[in-house]
Image (cartoon, rainbow, N blue to C red; front, side):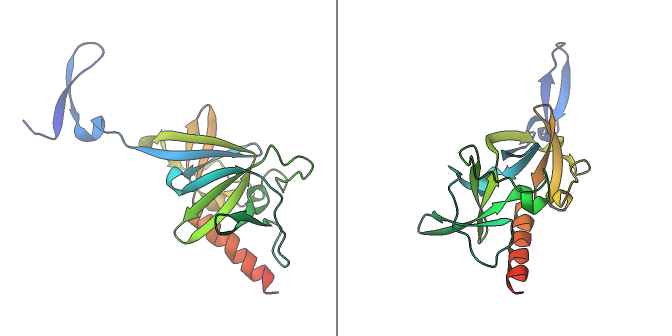
Amino acid sequence: MDDSSNLSITSAGTATRATRRDLQTEHLPLFGIRVGSISLLLDAHDVMAVTAMEPPTRVPGTPGHILGLVPHGDGALSIVDLAAFLGVNEGSSVDYGDVSSLRVVCVRVGELEAGLLCHQAIGVAQIRTDSLQSASVLRGGRLGEFVAFEVEFRGARVGMLKLKALLDAARSVSRRESDR
């Protein structure tokens, strides 16, 4: 008998052979956020913290999607307005009249850190790798540039962000615009 397969009993009571790959479906821990009406996923390992939105200190010469800096640990964290940067939901997420409902998801990928402004931090979910599909639906604004995969989750189409690419692009735009 090939040791890469195991005997499995189906719900009908019949025996079938299943490979170890079939028995060990991989899951990814992904962190869900909502930006306006769009739900997005991040690698949960990249999420450091979730905080309430506090008014950031604006930095002169930065583009509109960088809202400013907030204290974080021993330093400061740039706050990226995802709706404004991605060009979804008619621009900015910020309603300064009521910031209490907004959340900042603090992320780190390698040496890049930022706070991502969102409307809701949904939390961690285990997503089966075999349920990930090529990005084809979520395309508005710049969203298509940064969605790696899509998945049906809780009855909605959700996009998994290429976080490093997004943070690199947000930083690059900031540098180019501040150099003018």
